[in-house]
Amino acid sequence: MIDVAKARRETPGAANVLHFNNAGAGLMPATVLAAMRQHIELEAAIGGYEAADQGAAALDHAYVAVARLLNAAPDEIAVVENATRAWDMAFYSFQFQPGDRILTAQAEYASNYIAYLQVARRTGAVVEAIPNDADGQLDVAALERAIDARVKLIAITHVPTNGGLVNPAAAIGRVARRAGIPYLLDACQSVGQMPVDVEAIGCDMLSATARKFLRGPRGVGFLYVRRSLIEELEPPFLDLHAANWVAPDRYEIVPGAKRFENWETNFAGKIGLGLAVDYALGWGLEAIRDRVVHLAEHLRRRLATLPGVTVRDLGAERSGIVTFTCPGGEHDAIKQALGARRMNVSTSTRTSTQLDMTARGLGSLVRASVHYYNTEEEVDRFTEALADICRGRG
Ligand SMILES: *Cc1c(COP(=O)(O)O)cnc(C)c1O
Image (tube, rainbow, N blue to C red):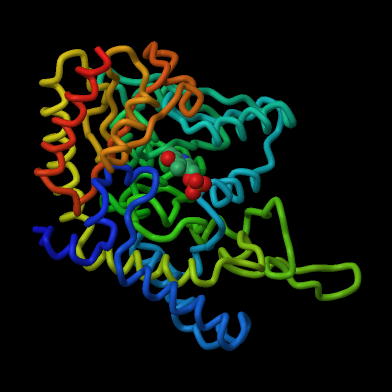
């Protein structure tokens, strides 16, 4: 069980705002904020390189912490500037040939799909989105039927940015393992709100970000690559951190997942990432998941009582991302009106998950994403405010 009062005391922002934008960026805990501030102050006081030397243990700890979170090893972790770049470093490492197939899901994230389209255009590979099952998540049986010798990669999003659902990542992993196909998981919205174990899931690569449900800083992301695959993947970019220039005409790529990194980085952010992971592990990811699911279901039930408001979430398993449409559909204006009451949500438009939103006939959605430090009282207050705003507009 989560001690919610304690979690809120340790979250400075909880006193200021009703924060249902954890899928955008979670509120940082005080420990994360303090450690980052301290490192930046040290940089200013003694010099950036000298501060990095002094902070070496805390910087190394980020790899140990992320590895513990994912049930991986520290040398299988790269820390980069965001989840997109982490995902790119894995995806663009593959050498596709004409006719190679990349299998993905309907609710795939725009940035990933744009990369598929670019690579398809460049190489003649084809990208195919596996249909959904009756629950609205990826149909694992359809995925299994789609497997043949030309499938070179399975790449899906664990928790789509909109739509509430949790894709059956472990069932997909079993299909990938049986077929011997590399499996790249975008876990940007799942890490930090539920247990994500790369062994249990069976993914070979995983990307995520610090700032969302992990409650770390902005501008930091990370990549996991299974050790057996690391040496096979040549990163799309190399620099003097990812490789060593060993002779005038020769370089050697460094061992381990650091080959996916680049030299200059946000040192305070990396320290913040490690502490944010420690903080999440301190609560326990199962306890976090249980509370998030409970609060999200409470919110869905309350929203369903509002005239004209329609909850749009799909999936057999649901996450802390709650999406809905309002009468009139002016979702940005509703977000602004909630913001004026210091209630934070985000909106999601068709272009962020084109295939899924188009298939569902949706132009935009309001996204209210809850975390364990939110309360039932906030859910009730939010629902009342939304009713009031919708009444005014209806
Ligand atoms: C936010 C998000 C990303 C991108 O993460 P960044 O850290 O902003 O690069 C990728 N995939 C999904 C599903 C997301 O929600």
